[in-house]
Amino acid sequence: MSIFSKYILIGMCCTMFTDIVISSVKKHPLVEEAKEEWGMQGRLLVTLLWPLAVLIFLKAFFTTIFKK
Image 1 (cartoon, helix red, strand yellow):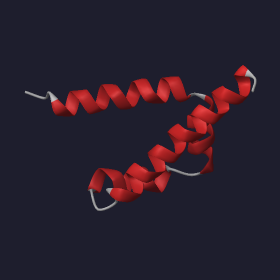
Image 2 (tube, rainbow, N blue to C red):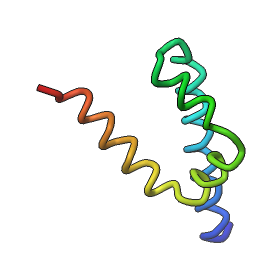
Image 3 (tube, rainbow, N blue to C red):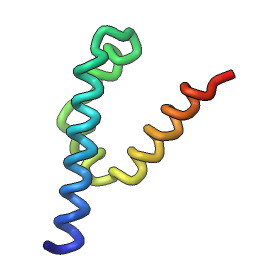
């Protein structure tokens, strides 16, 4: 398997994780706004730019957890 194939595979896994998170917390008001904007274009961007998407997710996650 080439490096490019591994990169795309990891990106697809990140996109699947994002879809699962969005569908599991769909009652939250902020998620409802994001769900409206989450389409094929967003999925494609996360698949291609997954390292940046992971960094943004982790920053938001830890900011929320350790908020004072």
